[in-house]
Length: 480
Figure 1 (cartoon, helix red, strand yellow):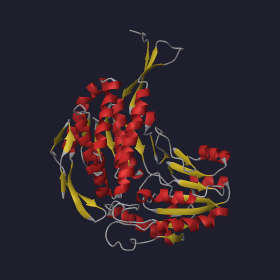
Figure 2 (cartoon, helix red, strand yellow; figure 1 turned 180 degrees about the vertical axis):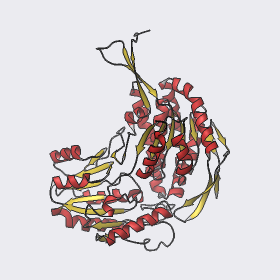
Figure 3 (tube, one colour; figure 1 turned 90 degrees about the vertical axis):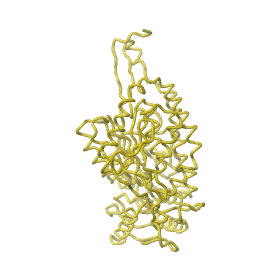
């Protein structure tokens, strides 16, 4: 049993001032794998005070020096990659090879891309030739509460922390209590990299405790949150009393529009993408919309692909998906699968219960429903598990209408060899991101959504801008 009952505050590891112990459950075994401390108000106050005290000096640190600190963080991060992969696999159920190849490298990817964006970023620039005595100065927001989820922990931690550091913000990180161990290793990386004390602080806690305390705290200038839309609404209400800025990256119900002329790998690609990370990705393409002439073959292929996906323990090497994160999530997914059956969707792969040979652990069968209609619960609610809903469409207009008929707007997908159609749909789909024909977004591309998928953007120059205020100065004397 691992014991990690310490917080990182003001450049040092400190014992909790209040709060309680919390057992971290290994979803593969359903057994406790670690004990951490959940902080209380005194710990939150101490972390915010440290961040506030450090802010003036960090804000005044030249961007080139802040960038140099991030370069050192990237260097140290690489040395702890295996430790992070092992922790992530154990605490949230990512298969160890997936943790090594996707989970931890996502942090490396974002740090590298932020460095590229930062080196080209104009923190201080003229308004334009028409106004030679006007300047635009980009200044940090201030102290930021960063609340991150369990499903892609290093992805989300680096998207927030690194952008905030480059912008000149100081911060308090509250990682998910479901996957805190990798975050504690990240704090060790920060410490070894020599970041000035108080700039980065970490307090473990749950949403009702430290999360709520940070959202309402008068010493916090901004909340950057990734998680459920339900929690995002609560945070927004809590933050309103102090009029702090709120950036939200929330849920999704991505549509994957597959036209008759899509490439031959489109269906398989869509199923695998949906099931990756055991379906626990907000940008997963969980609604597969297929043009009627290709619908029957797509359903058969999707069922075959899902049936071939292996499910196994997270600690075992190989290509498989692991368990979902906890019992509550397992029960929610089972309930939604049952609702899908009850509402008349046609089950063509997977279904209720654990996969054969697994009688312990929060394992879910890769599940595919066909003949889903847009009004069904499984077509509207974010399931956050390895469950795909397939529905037919007749025309491009109908596909667009179904895709947009959702409260969410994070990522949609288009599969067609008709370039003009692809471009039309890219403009018509109401989502923060559209990926077409299997092409992933490029380095530095912004991540974020519309509608109930949140607001704000993470990644690249847009991610840095999210943590900046814009100051307009007139009467500036050039060269003075």
